[in-house]
Image (cartoon, rainbow over all chains, first blue to last red; front, top):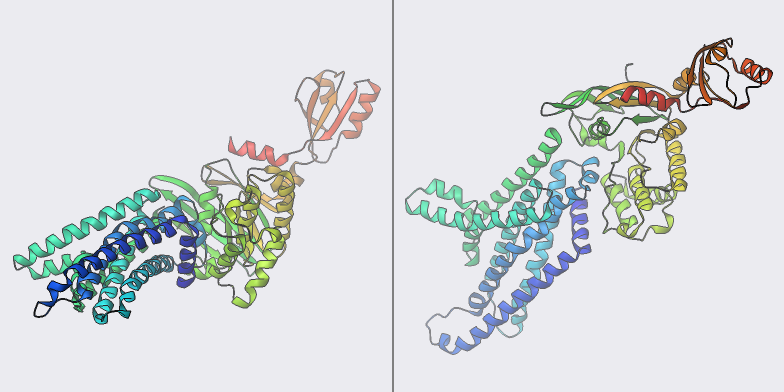
Amino acid sequence: MIFTIAAKELKGLFASPLAWMVLTAVQVISGYAFLKRLDDFLQIQPQLVQLASPPGVTELVVTPLYATTAIVLLFAVPLLGMRSIAEERRNQTMVFLTSAPVSISQIVLGKFLGLTLFVLLIVLLVTAMPLTLATSTHLDYGLIASLCAGLILIAAAFSAVSLYISCLTTYPMAAAFGAFAALLLMILMGEAAADGLRARGWQLPAAFVQVFSPMKNFEPLGKGLVDTYAIACSIMLVVVFIVLAVRRLDGRRLRG
Amino acid sequence: MSIPSDATTIYARALTRRFGAHAAVRNVDLELRRGEVLGFLGPNGAGKTTTMQMLTGNLAPTEGEITICGVDLLARPTLAKSKIGYLPENPPLYRDLTVDEYLKLALKLHRVPKVRRRDALTAAKERCGLTNVGRKLIGTLSKGYQQRVGIAQAIAHEPDVVILDEPTVGLDPNQIRDIRSLIRELGGAHSVILSTHILAEVEAICDRVQIMHHGDLVYSDTIAALQAFHSGRTVLLGLRRPPADAELAAVPGVTAVERASDKLYRLQFAADRDPTEQLVQRAVENNWGLYQLAPAQTSLEDVFVNLTT
């Protein structure tokens, strides 16, 4: 059932111009960022050779590419996520799912999966760019894999938050902006708060706050460091918002 | 209300739904047997839609219990919901899907096994007259066709209970006839709850009727009983040269005379004393100019208006 709903979400996304617009825009923006970085790298390459252990093309070109993509996703995912529940409720099609023998958790998980799979497609398309360099240079595949994993976790976190905010209103635009604002706040405040708390030696509150900062959790993976705590935080963030979304939708049935 | 048996498809007892302090539905009992079509009436805002939302598991009742084919809807919602097909007031259509894609999705969500899906799809399209539009986008279809798609998704998985909220709104007279005969046909093997404002529709296709008003169930009876009770006890009499009212009242059997208009009378009479023959005879003898004599119609409308105003 979860997969049926996920497939339906994907079909719905591709039937709308929004999905194609987002895919195109992400490709153009990250393509530009990639080429610009590559160009810069080629210009400073002679100086790099003189360093004792110079950073490679993966670190200087690919890592920033993923950081740029993460920022594009910050705009794109809320827009894609607004469809999933706010728009369904506005068009009164949500009844189609809630009348079927499917639980609310299955609906939410299906929608989350559909949205995340779509964002995964963006990650794959972006990853194809550095892979084109493989013919002419040596790439650090470990770092690329770690960056991919980091971006997927960010995508999942953004999807979960967007999905939850999408449950709060029947105005798709309000849902999109709300999700964007919430994510931006989480990134800005989460990071600052975690750093500030840690500086005072309050490890536990800092660890708690870090859960809500998707970018902070991306950092170690962005450096090729598989930090299990950061990964656990990202997964926890996803779980928290999915549970909130399920409760919210179930509450609608109970309280009207 | 009797104890639910095997033939009972919906058994709801003492349903109450409150929104804050306001009770949208109060203490409603409802029972539906296999093969029955139940007409669900009431003015706008009477609580019909709320009741239907509760019966389909879209809204949890504040109090009361609902059993669908012996399965408790509140305790085992997934199993109970698989026995229901629901067409809400606004058909939940995905405009970006084709009719085939949409109905296939409905079949999948209702857990129809893969081997049966193709046949079920063909059957549903045939029943609703959608065979030629399977590959069209729902968004490009006319309102009538969209309504049919809505009905098709409610019946495609062959549910035991079909709940239709105003299914003939926005259809042309031919389509309404088609949909009515479809509902009648559904009533054979399934049971149907039909909410509507069109009283003639209820009289034409329903076995039983329930009327809601301000959240209460105010009337519940079979159409046959309703017709037996009211039909034949009132006649409309049209006279070009009417005599005094007293003269009409003097006809044996007539219990009350009421002027419907200048020359049209509504006569009530005792159940076993039909004065029609006497009326005709006297009209001819006294040259009253009889031009109309008919049993009064729309008894359901009388009941409805009486109970809800």
